[in-house]
Image (tube, rainbow, N blue to C red):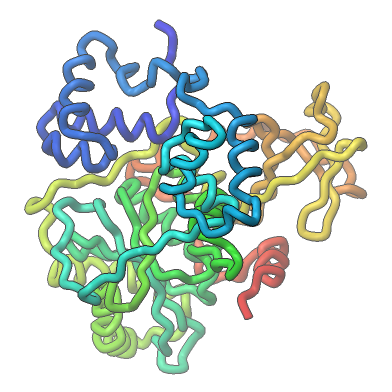
Length: 434
């Protein structure tokens, strides 16, 4: 049987369909998560017996839409709309006049998108009549996870633990987190890594608009232009690759569950750490893992038996280490080298392929400081220019794919009580927020 190549979104669709078929969630809830109607979910479920998993793969994949507007028509319409006499036309009137005067039959919504992309029209969002309305808990565990950092003198001067990165489930208040030396991308990615290994992928995360999560808006850019630019932070890119949604909070009150939990932590946790006479970061994190979080989840969290667990396991194709890393694109030079973080690297002779020159290369700086590169989806060997070729060693052990099997990554031992590797320090310095 031919294996079907699916995107992460299609695999997530298949997961929701199977949950709906097994009665774990309702068809309406599955439709909401998939972004389709209830009727479409019923139709897909009816076709699953015949098509199997391929039911989520669109039959027109790879084919151009029959309704696609020719680029020449769009160019002609935009040339007309940019004339001085058309400067105050709205999308609806512009659509009518294009059809009447120039025989360009285009809907008003298509004209609106063209004008917004060109900066000729700005949308006017509606204002909310009520600010910070009360919001009920989500229905399922892992449906929404609030993610934030609290800055506090947790050890009362006895150590370096000043930042507590915490993830709290919206439905049950079950929590997980770590003390870190700094509130940076590397540390937050590591906390998310541990959360995914323990529980699986949440459906969505809810964070503030810190520079780690959101790209600053440009003053001369419309919302349509920002949407088309699709600029992401490193964490935003990682969430997208892992199929985890992201919601931005526009006020502390919006993510009140995690904000209120920090108030409890700054009272209870500080006293517990003092009683335990903990004075260093490693001991504080051990206390969190073995004592504080189990106690919190027992006393303050709702039982898991009262809700449905909507966490999703990682697929076999997912690469957690590659996604949760600092990723940049580089162009391969004519001498099969590239630069990264002020250093030049050479692609190994055995990995050189025809047509590689001037092509894009994905550079991944993993959380443990390992630098790896991918060309056309496959890792290739590299070495820093000037270094001698590494001596032959035994084949490396295959990468673990069962991240949700209950074990912990070996490299995570001592991660939160040691400084970042040299390359990560260089990256953090160059991306420091002033």
